[in-house]
Amino acid sequence: MNRVERIVRASWFPYVTPFVTFVALTYVAGLWPGAAHLWYAAKTVVVGAMLVAFRRRYPELGWGGSVANWVIGLVAGTLALVIWVAPEDLLAPLMLGESTGFDPHAFGLTGGALVGVIAVRLFGASVVVPVMEELFWRSFLMRFLIDSNFERVALGTFRLLSFAVVVGAFGIEHHRWVVGVAAGLIYGGLLVWRRDLFTCILAHGVTNLGRGLYVLKTQQWTFW
Image (tube, rainbow, N blue to C red; front, side):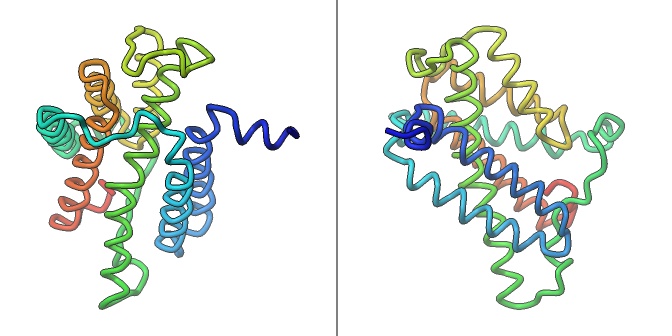
């Protein structure tokens, strides 16, 4: 087995690679803001394809296991959504840099093309991103910070340092970092409580889908 094969077969590879790819494509997209819709579609397709290709290497993925997990995930995701959109004016001085958000009308598209851009954005944000991020942040990194052989650590194991680092890093990943930290606390708390990653993915997806619908309704593009 050569070096490349060893890396691809490493336990961390399917967790880290989609996340790093998404971040890298997000950075590249920032260099061409006029084509942001095309770059978002590209990273949604590429990262989505990676997640599908690696699906057999995610033993923690499932469908919630119980009605209670579904209900809890829906409620937690809605709570995170309310926190996310409510305190905009109060948090403005604490935001990291400037953000113009994503305005689907800014690319000169109409009709089916405009609908397509909006649909891809909603799908990417509410399906691809929650799966990718929960696998990276709470399934991989939260356990990796406890033991580099992270598969030996039970999903949802709580250690204050690993929990705090993941919550903080997840918050800083977002322009609105305070509400990002709050959402990270909710999703991380869910994992510790329920020991089920799907509940976190569901909550994350509900938050992102609700935020997208809220943005389309209010046209407050900075939330997107």
